[in-house]
Image 1: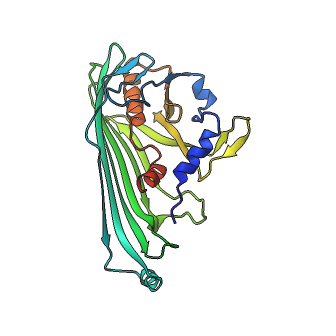
Image 2: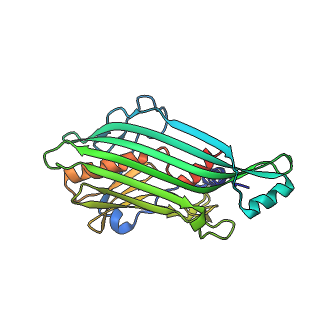
Image 3: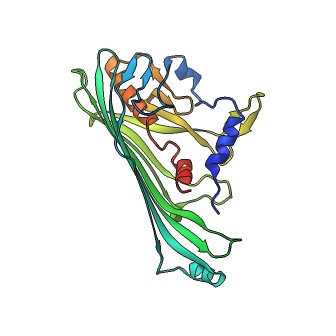
Length: 284
């Protein structure tokens, strides 16, 4: 039976103070936090603004969502055993795709951003005519990919940048054994212009502070709170997806800040953030 972890986490968050990414003091003392406006609320004519950065209207293509369920003809021994209890199994495949584009400027420099988000999942569905058992499903594997092309329109940055975030899960390789263990997922994130590389590392929190100042663990495992961007081995930016803010290292050239701001804003505009929990919500 699938647990609706997303709803549980939202209930926990509603009783706590605003959750934020944990920003190292060594970095925050040399960086500036920019609150991003325009992420939430009315999406028609959506624009973002943070610091001296503004976007054009975010143009989104049609979101595509589909699902296909079909009966399995080849069964494993354990699935054949379930038939004795009038439990049948199906295969189910889910697809989700979206895209968007916009420009970002700081008053002097401009960058164009084109992004695509893709998700596909294969499930095993257990069906029963017994109302006491009902139906249930579990994920066999899924793949999520977020890609973006960033084209700086400035003489100081000639090469376009490619942004890639990948999240994969395969039940056959999952090492989680206990009930509330977080599943093992393969994650990769980077941005490159062919010459230089920016590593993108997910950040997660496992504790929240309640309104009364008491620390409590996040139910269902660590929760994605943001991303850390590393350039030449050093942290240059942090994206806080819980607080909708971007931290930028102060000692950077404007052209480099434009690239980092483009990457950060594209990440904040993704439809799926914490893929594992968003996937559970999508499956309902």
